[in-house]
Image 1 (tube, rainbow, N blue to C red):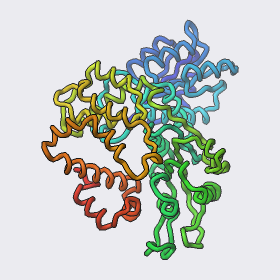
Image 2: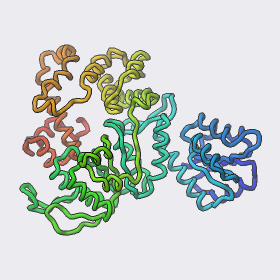
Image 3: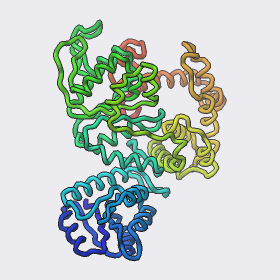
Image 4: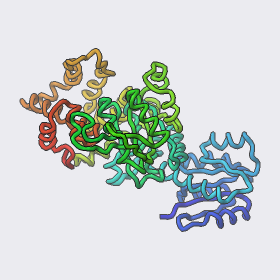
Amino acid sequence: MKHGVIILDDDVAILQMLKTNLASDDLHIYLETDSESAIKCILTEHPSVAIIDINLPNKSGFEVLQQIKKIDPGLSVIMATAHNTTQNAIEAMKYGAYDYVTKPFDFRKMKTTVQKALECNLLNRKVRFTKEREPVNKEALDEDIMIGSAPEMIEIWKMVGKVADSDATALIQGESGTGKELLARAVYNYSKRKNRPFLAVNCAALPETLLESELFGHEKGAFTDAHTRRIGKFEQCNGGTIFLDEIGEMSMANQGKLLRVLENQEFERVGGNETIKVDVRVIAATNKSLLQLVKEKTFRLDLFYRLRVVSFYLPALRDRMEDIPLLIDLFIRRFSHKYGKKIKGIAPEAQEMLLSHPWEGNIRELKNVINSATVLCKGDVLLPTDFDALLEARSGMKEIDLDMVGEDYYAVFWSMLEPVFEGLCAKNKGAIYENINMGLEKALIHMAMQKTSNNQVVAAKLLGISRNTLRDRIDRYKIGSPDS
C-alpha cells in the first residue's frame, strides 16, 4: 500500500528536488504550487504527510495548515521556511504541525523526518478523530484500541511517534481505567522491538516475594514451593518490552533490584548467584503520584528519575468529554458484534445521561456500562432504562476504603446489589443465589488469572486456594476458552 505525501511550495525547483530525494516505492508524491489546489488534493487523495512552505503567495502556510487540520486533524504536517525564527517555530507547533524544518534542506534528515511523520500518521489512524460513525472491521472490534479527538490525546500520539523507536524508559501516569496499558502497547507496537515479546506485570496484584520471583525468576530450592528453576519475566522478555503496571506498589527491596536492571541490564534470580544479562525496554505506569511517594519515603527518588526518561500523562475521561460519544459508538458496535445483536446506536437522552455521569472509573467504567446495557437491551437502540440501574449502582460505589471494610464485604456487595436486586430476582426466577455465587466465583478466578498472566501457581496463592481447586474452576467456567 502506497502512502501519499503532498508538497506545497511556490518554487518549482524545490518541489522537484524534494520529489527526487523522497522518491520511494512506498510513497506517492503530489506536487502543488497553489494552496487551493493543495487543499483539493488533500480532500480527494487523503495523503498521510504534508510538507508546506510557510511563505506562500495569496495565503500563508499557517493559514493552509489551520484549514487542512480542520479537514484531517490526523494529517502529519511538516512546515518549511527559509526564515528560521522563534515565532515561526512556535506558530507552527501551536497550529498542530508535526515538525518544523528550515531551508536549505538536509535531504537525509528530511527523509527521516518524513518517515517519522508517516509513522505518527499511521498511529493516529488508529485513533478515531472524526465525530462521524466510521466502519470498523471485525479485527478492530475484537481488539482494544485507543480513541480520541481531544487535543491532549493528539499530543500524546505525537509524543509516541517521537519516542517509540528509542529504547528510552517511559513512565505513564493517569487514573485507573484511562488506558495506560493500551498506551504502553502503542509505544511497543511502533518500536523497533515490535517483533519481540511484550509482557505486562501488575505490581499491585502480587505479594512482594511472589513479585520478585515473577520478575526475576528463582532457583530450585530458593523457597518452600520452589521445586524447579523458574525463568522470570525479564528473561522471557529479552530483546522485547516489559510493562510494569502500578509501579508505585513495588516494595523498596524490589525497587532496588529494578533500578539495577535499568542501569546495567543485569540481575540475579532469587536464591541464585549467576548474573543474568538482558536487553529489555521498561515501560512503567502508575495511578499515584510518585513524587508524593518519594516524599513519604516509600519510593526511591533515583528510580523515579530513571523511569521518567519519557513521561506521559493520560487525562481522565471527564477531562476529554468530546471523546465520550466516540467511545460509546465503538463499544456499542463491539458488544453488539460480540453478543450477536443488531443495536444501531444510543438514544439522545441516554447519551446525555452518560455525558453527565462523572465516570470516576474512566474508560473502563464506560466500557463495562455499555457492555451491560448491550446485554440488557431488548430493542435496536440503547435507551435510558438500559442504564438507570447500572449508573445508580456505580454511583453508590465511589472509592471503596478497603481499610474501613476490613474482612467483611457485606456493605460492598449490598451497595452493588441493592439497586438492581428486584430486576435480578425477576430475571433469575428463583435461581439468583446460585447464579450470583457462580458469577462472583468466576469473576474472582478470571481476574486472578488475568492479573497473574495466567500463572496458575501464583493465582492459586493469590486466592488462597489449592491449585487443584483452581484448575477445577477454570475447567468448570471455561476460563481462557473462546466461550469464556
